[in-house]
Length: 142
Image (tube, rainbow, N blue to C red; front, side):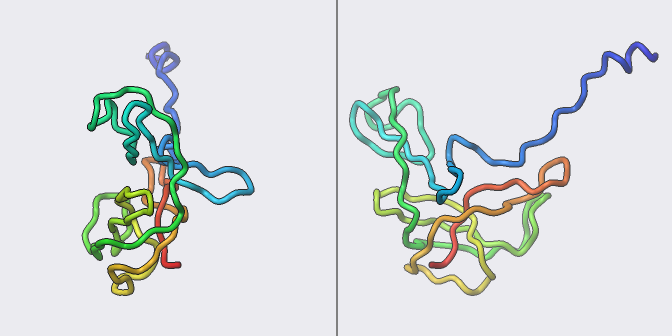
């Protein structure tokens, strides 16, 4: 029995940062989302889609996306999955690069309006399996 305990693998800690392939947080700089432009046809996507849905290309270059956009649509949510504090807000943001982003919105329910300007920020989106906050991208009012 004690030998089995010795062989038992130590549990790895759960993530606390969500998808580094989507979000960059450079030291002493503002965070930005990572778009991916197909080298074959030039289509820009977020997140990266492989192969390119336009031309089936498989080579991409990372492009920093604009930090500001226009709130296209949103919803105040009062029931959420485990680990999410309710209520919270999710929405679609149109960026100048002609990319639409789905993200959580930082702010109070019943305060957002479609067509208002929002900007990228970071913050906790939910708790991980260890009870620690998972940090990711969000948008807030300008």
